[in-house]
Image (cartoon, rainbow, N blue to C red; front, top):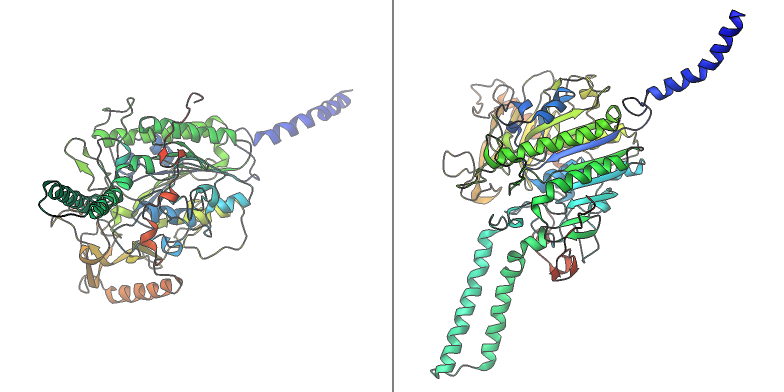
Amino acid sequence: MYNQCFALRSVLLAPLLFLLLTAGSDVTGKGFDQKPNFVLMVVDDLGIGDIGCYGNDTIRTPNIDRLASEGVKLTQHIAAAPLCTPSRTAFMTGRYAIRSGMVSTGRVQVLLFLGGSGGLVPSETTFAKRLQHQGYTTGLVGKWHLGVNCKHRGDHCHHPNQHGFSYFYGLPFTLFNDCVPGEGSDVLVDLQQIFLNPAFVCLCATCFQVCVRVCGLFEVSLWLLVLHFFLCILATAVWYVPFEFLSTWNCIIMRNQEVIEQPMTVETLPQRLLGEAQNFIKRNVDHPFLLVFSLAHIHTPMFKTPQFAGKSRHGAYGDNLEEVDWMIGKITETVDSLGIANNTLMYFTSDHGGHLEDSDSQTGQKGGWNGIYKGGKAMGGWEGGIRVPGIFRWPGRLRAGKVVDEPTSLMDLYPTLKYLAKDTQPDRQSDGYNLMPLLEGEVARSEHEFMFHYCGIYLNAVRWHPPGSDSIFKVHFFTPNFFPPGAGGCYDTRICLCHGEHVTHHDPPLLYDLFHDPSESRPLTPDTEPRYAEILEQTAKAVERHKSTLPNEQAPADAHSEILWKPWLQPCCGTFPFCGCKENTTHM
């Protein structure tokens, strides 16, 4: 009788036990066989020295620090460029921006107008495109800054929807000072003055001719007056229309391919971006998704959110950074509360280093702090402009508290996501490497033996991590000319340039060992470095091999025209030029 009862109970318990075992994989996340989710969080212009887990003890970043303590922190995480557009191009494509033509030979190294024709070419491949083909739902919330239209308004050839993101909400351009009244202008201020002068001269000449005609001093043809009048209108329009309405042309919000706010209300932007990012995660909790949360912070102008204003020890910049930390905490909280943490790889970084020259007498320092590293945003290969935070969290997969000191790159995200999404299809030339063996501790060394650092189209510096050595040598072929002499930035132009009189070329190149001199303050010489000649020889050979993979090394012939404002390409809510609308936020 006992055996019969035991057998009956075993039969009844077996299905229950099976259900418990199969459901157990969902307690902290989806099953191991399911493709993981990806939440990539990218801050704008954040300095590596601004974060607590990277050594800052005066700005509060507990949520970012928590990601590091629960995951893997990279201490030598490198952006492929020290400016937004080329860095984000490399991040999205896994390739140096020069391969996509997203580089410049002159002073303008980023896209300046939404109404320009420049942008990430439709033929380029992003990690979002690859993941879409693997069945992922893909979304980008926040900043894009890689172009919109090519030939006519509405073709959206550079738009995120055309580059693998099935959902887009945010800024197709970027946040900049012109978006907020009273914050000044960021776009070609000196050129605005140059355009203003001819218009003023033309107006004065026309007024003089009218006075001469009215007073009867000389005979002035009426047709000549009419011609001068229209020339004055044209000269005025050349500078006034593109520049005086920048907040209308550039400061807009789009949902997919529809302009939903123009100009945007900056004060509520952080809350709207956060809400959209959280809702995207919630909508897609039951199937694999990719979310790129590209924050508008911490680029100027500074936000003045009441909850954070005046609360930090570092003025407006500190307030904004603590708001960033709060937003990162909310995203992490959303992932955890939905029970998908164990099947979600979370990543935190910045597109490049902090902007050292950005400050004023009222606000104080508005750019970030790059710690012990020399230089900052737009300073070519100096470490402060390209070494950024890099944090990965994946409970159950990545060991908590692990630190990786090897060279890694933002370009490594592309092959890493491909690997995790089980994408084995053929691909084009890539400059990144799958990070998972390094993150999981299967290997101790990075696959990046050489890394190349560009300033615009120009190869600025090369780093070499010799096999079997802890040293990381960096060779600088040229460096920006800081002003005033002895300063740590280009305070005359407010941003360093890559060409002509703005740089100093070095022959032989400047050489540093970042392992022993991370601040790049002690150049090596043949007397202080036994391998000096070998280092220069090996880097020169690496440069030749690298250049041989760049069949289209030069920038497009019409690269400069692509950045110009073209009215027929301007995204517009309404009938151009009467563009204007406000987002309906009652549902938020």
